[in-house]
Image (cartoon, rainbow, N blue to C red; front, side):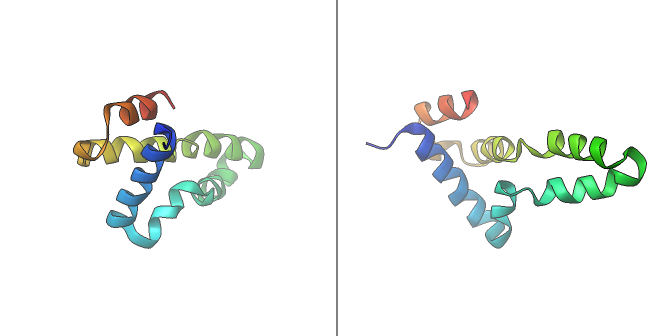
Length: 87
């Protein structure tokens, strides 16, 4: 039997692939972190910009889960939702 953590994450990836196709993997990479840091470096300096960028981008998978549950709640079991909320 597959653990709820694995199934809710797989379902989120599937939903994102359906909605955003080739852009879906961007939520699992640090691409946004790099872009945010670059945009803030002149104003904040490289170290502070990197710190702010990290905190603004490290929750992408959490946000993806919440969006997926909002759009397709019927595709998740109670256990998967519970696991996704507590992950």
